[in-house]
Amino acid sequence: MAIRTMNYSDAIAEVASYCKVEVIASYPITPSTPIAHALNKIYVNGGFPKFITVEAEFSAVSALLGASAAGARTFSATSSQGLMLMHEALFSTAGMRLPVVMAVANRAVSSPLNIWADEQDSMSQRDSGWLQLYCKNGQEAVDTTIQAFRIAEKTMLPVMVCLDGFYLTHTISQVDVPDKDKVAAFLPPYKNPYVLDPQNPITVGAYAMPADYQDFREDLCTDAEAAQDTILEVGKEFGKVFGREYGLVEYHNCKDADRVIITLGSVCNTIEKVADSLRARGEKVGVAHLRSFRPFPASDLRANLAGKHVLVVERDVSPGGVPPVYAEVSEALSGTGSTVSVAAGLLGGREAKRPAFESLFERMKQGKVKGWLCSKDKK
Amino acid sequence: MKFAVSKPGTTVAIKTGEWRSQKPVVDLSKCIKCATCQNYCPEGCMGAPGNGPEIDYDYCKGCGLCAQECPVKCIRMEHEIKIVGKKKA
Image (cartoon, rainbow over all chains, first blue to last red):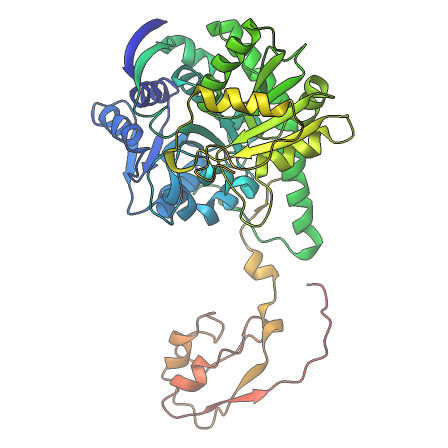
């Protein structure tokens, strides 16, 4: 291990090469471009056997689907409109149980056109069957990328490593880059039980009649939910080898807290700082970072946040309905006596400074929080 | 963990002729054995060139390409009346 000062995107690409990724297919889109750029740089220096330069994101994920079915470890990076262009093939990848891993540099979606951070893109792929792990900082991004391959290949489900665009893709900071040999030892070789092989031809992703189709989808749902155990197991194992343990949710001072903000992504860092300063003034506040959104760790949340006043801070919307994380948290904590409310906002790169979260914790004292987060509409 | 995987040969087992709503019928007295229909047939179920068409109705989907392309118009498409409900292959 070595602490190095580097761009997070470079660090992610470097560990992908330690993970012995065999096939990469990617199309540049801001803010995931530096990851693809770094991957390509490693490729031209012999770090990856194959980098397919495709004409669009639909082809990128389709190429990886094929490569993964042929038994290769695969990786890609995309954002926003690119991820949404992949939509159809994302469902196929999960349904075919192919453990593709992809870094998603979270960005707003059109329209209006905007290239800055929020999580509307990955949330829009919520039901695709891909597991979604959200990262708080560059270190988590690096560590989660390594774990993602092991989680994907154990569960035979594709994994998105979700990184807030710019905050976790363009920042240069200190990263503890794990040792190459240790990473290789941490990841057993990828073995697809139904590999595409011209000598022994099979059809993968075959046709399922009404009599069978639902069985496959039920199985996918059951396995995605059970992936919680694998994420925990891999997170623990990672801790043993590399000294940083990971779970499904990271609780920061939640045990005795009466008010907890639950969120995902890089905004968590600011909220933790605010919570710490409020703690120093004697306020019982905590922060929970939802690392795993798919699978959703409902029982974990119930065990740790039952009865508390929980506020969901999320950077996405669901026009005409409630935002997705709030819907999940409400369901998870229903019947536990918890009050759950939501503050959605910080869309398209809108930033929140500490006072915004101080005011949120303050407003939580009055019961359910209403309205947008950091809205220009002050009422 | 369930994988939707199948072995090759499903197109042999599945009698796609059941999908047919129209059936090509050949007037062999007019046929000049030019093999046009056999070359055009997307299912390859009209027999080998050299002989006149020998249609395998187990797999003919009734697309009508043969009737359209036949230079002497000796193939006509007839409406087919079938009993609904399929026998297992």
